[in-house]
Length: 257
Image 1 (cartoon, helix red, strand yellow):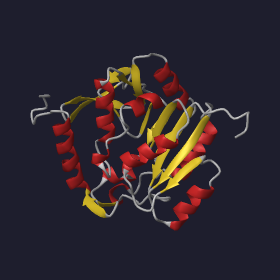
Image 2 (image 1 turned 90 degrees about the vertical axis):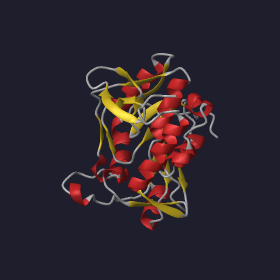
Image 3 (image 1 turned 120 degrees about the vertical axis):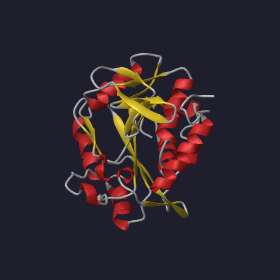
Image 4 (image 1 turned 180 degrees about the horizontal axis):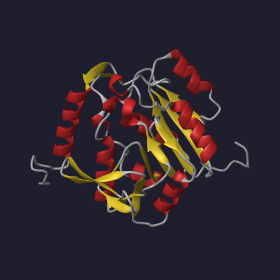
């Protein structure tokens, strides 16, 4: 390694399943964002020293070649199966060298100043454990209201499409709980763990960061193939919600035991 090498300040971790995201027929008129646009945004709009880590869960040969050869991707892991979101985030964190981890969906637009604002908010106070451009207050296992829509505000949960936390804290907590594989509730679980450890989850609003979620798996009912099995998204949601409630001692009335 060169003597002039300096580690990045932020490791951006992006799981990807498709090079061209399938269209949600009910939202066909909504724009689609893909890993191509995300990488372009990061290169053009982020001024902090950063690295990009992509975890590829797709089997399409075009996607694999894209991940292997794109010059904006610093590190990658190509899985032979869809390992799911939690496992992918954990893999990316193991490859990361920065003090701050940014977990980013492959359908999120990042404008000028957005990453910098989140980075400085995270490091600006020792009691802040997690930051993001969106989040919510929860009652038990249910979303109650959005948080920080006008001013910075503490949240119970930071939205999973974009969030930052210190690498040290992430590893201290043991990373993401892979029991939620392939997806759903893992980012909520992480926010609960961060708050349980005594840290705040902070929403920084009005940033030029936008989630084009309309063609994501959570936007419509489908079958998700992962590892060597598959699951219907509605069944998956109920399974993960039940596990989440049991893990955190939440009753049907939404009150912790």
